[in-house]
Image (cartoon, rainbow, N blue to C red; front, top):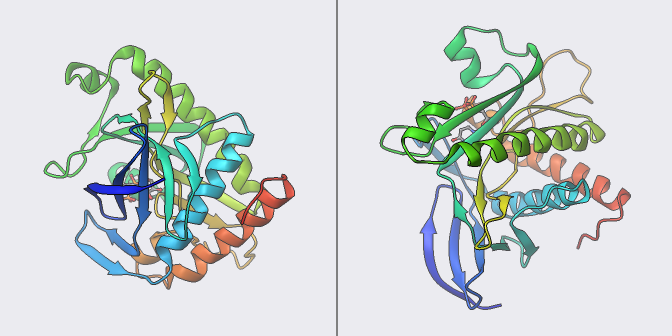
Length: 249
Ligand code: UDP
């Protein structure tokens, strides 16, 4: 597969065309951003780790009946994905109170919910990715009611599968962000990435009583180096994938 012209550059990834019109080439970068892009830093090895982690998570999800856009990993920092028409949406699932949920609603961090909370944020840098509801999305023609009737249950299924995956490596899945799109034949698929950049992951192997973050909150809140945490997630997911017979190289 040949890597052709750059189509897009985001905060953590670059997207390239390939000689197959249905396939894109994703390059994971070493940069981390937080606070709406105000805080930015490069971490050697982050691109490689996130490329591996996304691949492992997507493979583990596929094993649980949830396909994604991933075709295959093709190098340290690169993977091939199916081209999709993406919904300009950040789909957030929360199992435990953290982040914006706490600041917006005055709730203490760490409270477990009786049921998952599904939230949508419209991807729009100028407006700082505003929080929106179903009606907003429909009247703005971001998606249809029918789209939402597919997106919401898929998001909940992904949450259940991810809770299972992370529980098996002694990690609590607090919340995460996903993105979805449709392939040229109209199939709704999970896209983008699932990494410690896009999830809050709390270590359950630490018994000190305080929260041990294995995610980007280490960077957001200046709590410590992200690389050892990302390495730990990669190591545990690799072991889980191997135990489930998933081929990893
Ligand atoms: N998230 C993300 N990208 C964003 C905003 C949030 O991946 O642009 C993830 C974040 O890592 C967390 C979840 O979505 O796992 C919920 O984030 P929240 O709304 O609490 O916002 P934050 O506090 O991260 O700004």
